[in-house]
Image 1 (cartoon, rainbow, N blue to C red):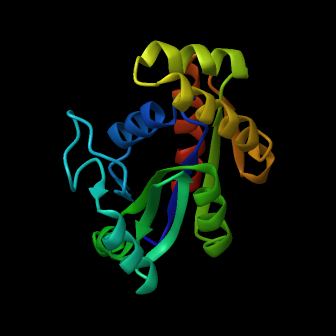
Image 2 (cartoon, rainbow, N blue to C red; image 1 turned 135 degrees about the vertical axis):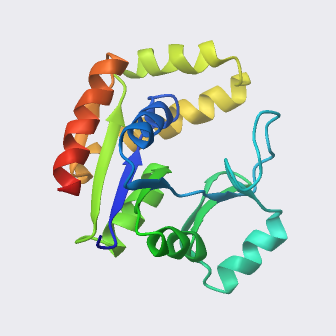
Image 3 (cartoon, rainbow, N blue to C red; image 1 turned 180 degrees about the vertical axis):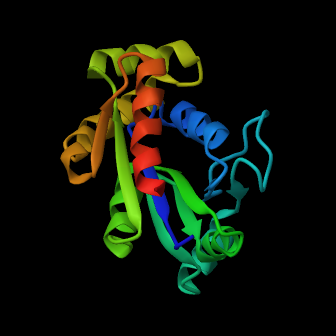
Amino acid sequence: MSRQLLIITAPSGAGKTTIVRYLLGHFRQLAFSISATTRPKRDHETDGVDYYFLDHDTFQEKIRQHAFAEYEEVYPGRWYGTLRTEMDRLWNDDKCIVFDIDVLGALNLQSQYPEESLSMFIAPPSLEVLENRLRSRGTETPESLTARLQRAAMELERCNSFDQVIINDDLETACQKAARIVTAFLS
């Protein structure tokens, strides 16, 4: 297998992680790229499985060492990035790397690997639907909800920069459409 990348992006709450899990469960050629982050670990998360949780100083040192294929301060004080060692680990296993990544990071990866990548933007039917999804999670403060919605508006403006756009109005339909796209990409 060649060194392929499947880049899946969306505003927070649009359903990208659920779609990524669906794809990982249906294609043995795919492997999940674990991102590094400075955000605090949530109770249900495991270091090295969900994310590589790094403190701010360690993350900044890795930036200086050029250890990231891409990185970004997604929210104030919250850094996310893709470690080159993570990509090498998965390519060495002959896998197509799946990225569940923010929009700007996705654009960065797509520009670095234009021939090797397929990018998908998962869009909510509307900002109102997205807001309702984020509220129903019960994980957002009023301030974090406002920040996520402001960022989502910016991200939605960039949806046409990606190879494919899937409107997640019905999750099962969106998963099946993503699977058809991935099947064509891997063949």
